Length: 165
Image (cartoon, rainbow, N blue to C red; front, side, top):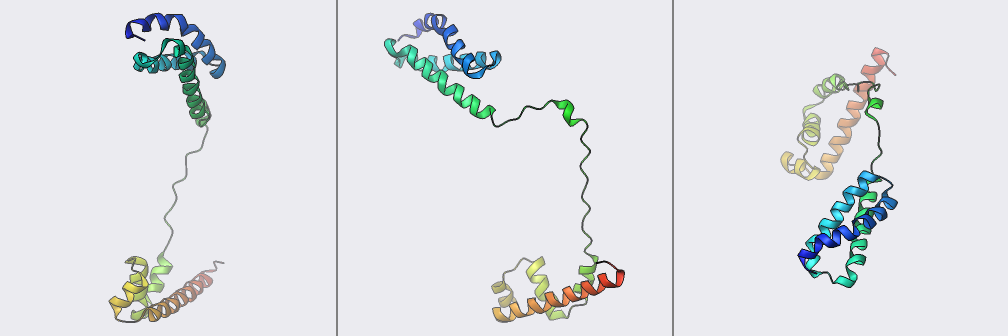
């Protein structure tokens, strides 16, 4: 079809496509928006459309655009803004108190403290720690187990002294 014929085609079929889309969307504004999108898409390919199949082609585009629109719309839940006015302000989370842990790490023997430092603060792997300290990976594992046991015992003792369960 020729681009010059598009205006006639539009005026002949616009209301039919609108009614079809209105039936799918059940919303006049959405249907009007979709009609516009459909006819823009038809116009872009109008010269390649054959006249006998032009209307069915337009309906197919209308159907596809409506299905895409409805699928996207179903992902959102409409909520009035007034419902958000009574929500409490989110609490700002306080940073956890690591003072007991820092104190316990300071009391670790130097070898155990270095393994904890490299593992948790420097984010080194067991292999990297073993290369850094010149010991085997098994020795690193053993030192970490001992250091964690020491820290757990120290922190539990501090908590018990303060009466925290």
